[in-house]
Image 1 (spheres, rainbow, N blue to C red):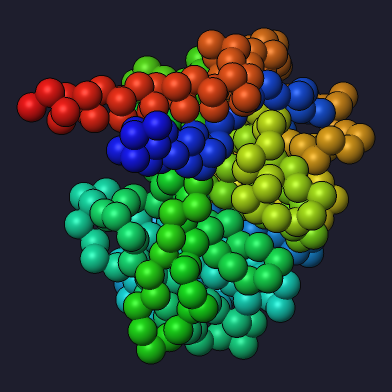
Image 2 (image 1 turned 180 degrees about the horizontal axis):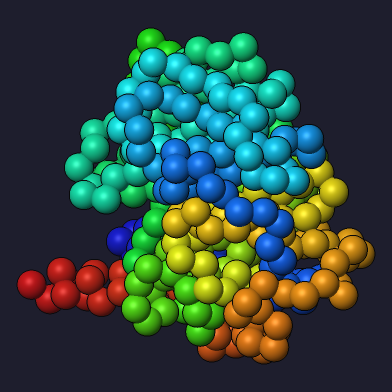
Length: 344
């Protein structure tokens, strides 16, 4: 085998190996049910949510200071705040660490022109620590933060074609230096017909707008404007989870859904901009539902269940077949490029 062709095929194999493609979902235990209304004007652009079982932690998309709102999960009322005078650029998500610190993902970049992105770590006592990071390739807009049990943050980018990049720091975070990130995978999401979101058509169903990791690290959730995808890892490994087959849960008719959060009992919380209700999917971890008989939120019910019965890859391709297809296409492109070079 020629050295150039061998290296080309090796590259194609590596490309195929790093692609994480959604596959056939299982069924959710219940449709989203309204819990309470978010009425605080500071959360009109709700973009991130977390839960410790006793309180919810929320962040808005905007403001001139780091600000985490602590909510009563029964009423959605703000009961306290964590603040820091640091002025963030564009906070898009948050995650709750085992030590009670809240991590804010200052990673929004609609114009794709930021040289660095940032994480703000806000401990229970207030104040914050700023960590800067840079992408290894080009600027990206990222609205999903996944924080594993070891404190390693993963960013999932927001891509209009549905091929979201997964990035993590390539070395320990340092408050005194910009830490480079490495791309460790790609999550592929396919368009669905679930209604909702700010965009016409089905583009909103593939844009990743939020993420959450369960307290024990075995469950990972990614959301778009219209769906949630639930991944499992018995080893509490984020990348291992994202390589698995997800459960797709429709979240219909949210104005601009960007917040998602696991609760300790296996429920999944969903929130939207526009001071809309926080909704809950009971038994999203696959456990028994305590809300099966409850009335679903408007737009749920038969439509949500019908759409959920469809595969996450609407062309019906399994993960293995999708990876094989991606590898074949990549290999073909490499071969054609090499052939043209040899001809010229």
